[in-house]
Amino acid sequence: MRRTVFNEDHEAFRETIRDFIAAEVVPYYEEWREAGQAPRAFYKKLGELGIFGIEVPEEYGGAGETSFKFNAIITEETARAGVSFGGSSVHTALCLPYLLKYATEEQKRRWLPPFVSGDMMTAIAMTEPGTGSDLAGMKTTAKLSEDGTHYVLNGAKTFITGGVLADRVLVCARTAPATPEDRRGGISILVVDTRSEGYAVGRKLEKLGLKTSDTAELSFTDVKVPVEDLLGEEGRAFEYLTHNLPQERLGIAVGAYAQAAAAVEFAKAYVTDRTIFGKSVASFQNTKFTLADCKAEVDAMQAVVDRALEAHDAGELTAADAASAKLFTTERAAVVIDKCLQLHGGYGYMMEYPIARLYADTRVTRIYGGTSEVMRSIVAKSMGL
Image (tube, rainbow, N blue to C red; front, side):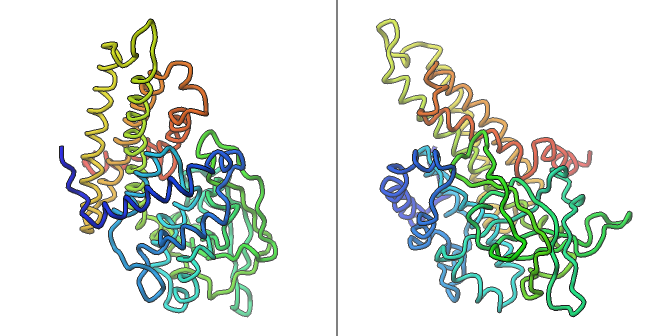
């Protein structure tokens, strides 16, 4: 079926991204995987290409686009090539919406130009050891100094993607204690300079997949954060975080669909070239039927993602819509990618094959951005259950 969600400008952008990936990512990707992160110099190249500034207003050095579809194209093209842009997706898809919506004019002029160029990479720190999805249970604190000039930040965060190379981290911390009536209140966002005394990067975590995105533990010991680096209003972070969740979950849904679509293409190419018992693996009925099932699943995922992209651009994507899209695409992608790996036989278990990397990478999509169980709760609640 003809896909109508993208126009000519989108497709021209797709060609640019595809060429960039072929020239600047594919030849070096194995080195990045072994290092456990993309090099910092690569992020500067993304900045020069304009990737970081797509949704940033022109007065701060960006392109001023408001559509999320350009981000979706990047996701589709990296999956198609079996690569990633390291931890940079957090920089653009997660951190940028907070800066655009809640930063003051002074903060935007200070932060957005280096954000666009790649001179200032960002990450966001919400999750803490022992709290998982319960953000209201966070223990990290930020106490205002007696003279009111700065906050004193103490605590620890974990699973922070981009945390190793980040220059600024949006840290969620308690500026007031929780109350029995409102556990979610009293949380604020501080945009912390990683060069600050008392700020430390702990272990770079060894993950099952997503090997080129640096993921770390962070700790804060009496870190002084100027009051000028408070993002938005004090105590309203939980509200802010909730506001951005639909886009975050849409991005994960797009990624799951793109990975499943890529898996089908990888499997199709493999079974076409591979012979067994003197016949192409693609010639067996089981192979044909398995790939046909996978193609039908991918078509359904694409329809869900495209509808969600249109709704998001129109400002109509609800929390329940995004949860439903994420739940469906991530759960079905796991099934599709598993079937495609099976068609590779033993080679599908080898990390030199992109299908093995996809298998590992896609597992986390049912965990981060809200687990599948949380998505089911949101959807059920929207049904009045």
